[in-house]
Length: 167
Image (tube, one colour):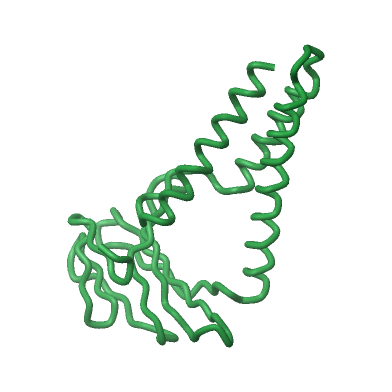
């Protein structure tokens, strides 16, 4: 039971950090939602197999977390199938240190087109660096090994510069 609960607590901590990273536009270091869902299901099974008393609260917690993560998976999959986020291009820095992926989103009646860009790190780590409303496409080029230019706006990635994300 302890292993299952520890795994569940780890998933809760990762989910909390993931929410914080998205709201504060920090590096997203957590695995994809489907990996956290699988970890939660494993935690549920480990808790379920334990026959000790007092496991009901753990079963409800892990089961609820699994349902929440499954809902997030389904909603993000539905949004991607509806074309809410469309891959445009990927550009790599001249020395291969940085990779930036550019996406176009369409909010439909709620807004218009928007260009988003993410800086990719190792594994699944990523950070949103560019957000521009009312744009359907934008030229992207590298000025040097650490400065990417969106249209006419340069962003120095070594300094952590972003556009359209508050700071």
